[in-house]
Length: 428
Image 1 (cartoon, helix red, strand yellow):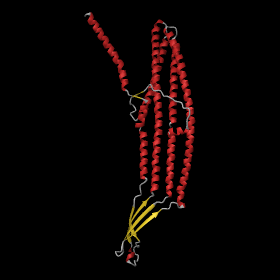
Image 2: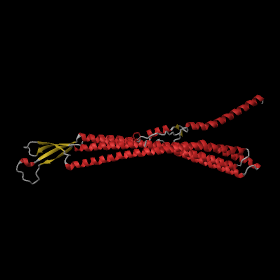
Image 3: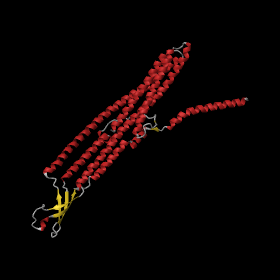
Image 4: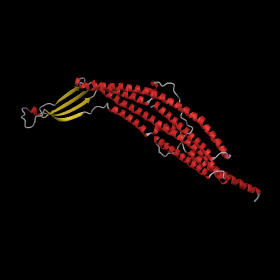
């Protein structure tokens, strides 16, 4: 074989090997690329649109609208057929006209339109309460989703750190294995490094379990199959903007529970208006037609219109007492609303102070403590590579660095959850 053919064969083998390694490298990336990446806003929007419990509130609100329309309906007419002034059997009839009559009776209640419209407005107003209940539940679900999202985010960061630290421990294990035959290390060092590697892998598995839990729960909130696979935006970081002042009027506009109380008060006021209409009269009309049993007697009829008198003292007491009771209830709810706003104002100030303190703490750990431990680890590891330090010293430095990295992420998670709770409380 010529020299040129040999070189061509070598080149083809090298190219084939390069393609094989390129394919092996790209396959995981292709698998990763197939997973959709959901931002937090996307997940929150899907919960808002697809969650079944949230949809139920809209249906309940619509039901109150139709119930209000039904309240304006009249009672059906009553039709009766019987006898009128008919003597009992075996009675002596002096004249033929005493035989009595067959009577057809038609009766219709005519309710007061003002009463019906007031009742319709009261019933329909309860639909607004259901809509606010939906907003309250949505706010709770959003807070749940945010907590799950940041837990997933921190778990992913833990996995990255653990995998990087595992590479260092694997390298130290290999160094120990190489040095052992030359009596430059002890066999126990190899086993200790192996135990740290296995311990590290267990911690990775724990984080993968956290990710799986968050994924399943988020899927259920979005009303999709719990095993649907997706990834999150790992660049997301919760942000916090401190407020100089919390105005109770602004909080009243923002908080959903205050909005619910406002709608409840409005509904009770409409109920009071409906009860006040009870002092207005109702009407009834009745038509009677008589067919005499005596053919010589003429047909007769009776038309009667009736009017209720609800202002009578023995009947007006009912709605007057109910009105007073509801007025006191409204005053109590107004006091409760004011107390709720004052309590929320103080709570938000406290939460803001706690978040700012945690931000300072995390910043100190991340910007000062971690770099110092990283430098110590690098120095010990460099000495270890030059055979100037023993493995236990490096492992202690490795453990201290890993523990601090995990502590920083734990504190970050607490900070992110504080921000989530703050946002939930702000719009609760």
